[in-house]
Image 1 (cartoon, helix red, strand yellow):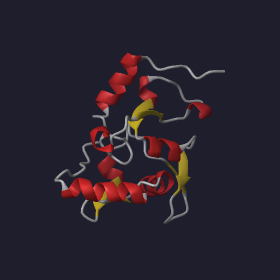
Image 2 (cartoon, helix red, strand yellow):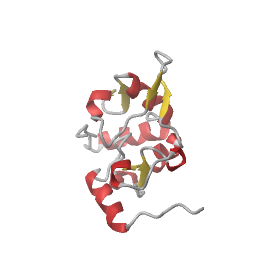
Image 3 (cartoon, rainbow, N blue to C red):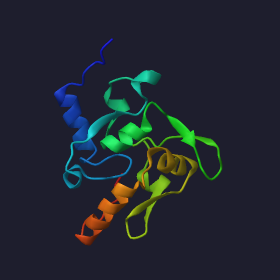
Length: 143
């Protein structure tokens, strides 16, 4: 059965609300040189829907790393924790920028599990962040 398509208006609404940033690694679409995807917070494979409340913008790498997961293990406590939900969770409550804005550190079980599962400090992204910071752009934690 084919996946139901998102309407262009709904896609635009989600992208605008996300401020054209990945809800997980906070990379801006303009700085990535690639379009963001629409992430299903609860994946369709797990009963999620194409409704506004279940959608957020994500970069392709974060979306692919997330796969159909809603939970992952916190590497510090080994507890199963829910992955960060950019629709309802506040980014700064679960993460912080360290190493001059090049790395994301999880502050909670959800934050640490999300950093590990989605590989938010993957080498290519850390390298890009170094260049962005060098050019004067610093990611923020508005979410």
